[in-house]
Image 1 (cartoon, rainbow, N blue to C red):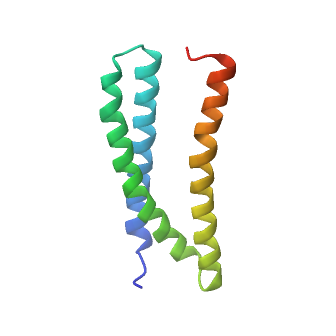
Image 2 (image 1 turned 180 degrees about the horizontal axis):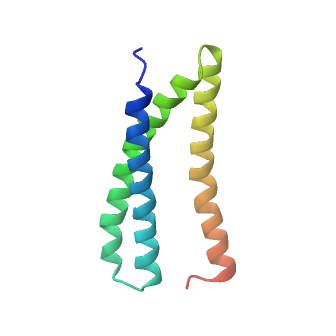
Length: 103
């Protein structure tokens, strides 16, 4: 397996993370500003594009930081955190919506 260049992965990770953050701010503005829900579709599409570019860059940085058995543990931890946030995020949002209200 060829190692990713830290310059390339770092140069990819920063703009994609910023882009994902900006799209999430855009989603918040659409929701808080009571805009038409159709504006959420391009925001969601952009967020998925940025996340799709961020994940390989993040894995490339992990492969530069860890080696051998540590690489397997670091990759497993990264995968676990991603899975946990995909489960806990919507669960927390559902609990908050049920307890506080939908708006």
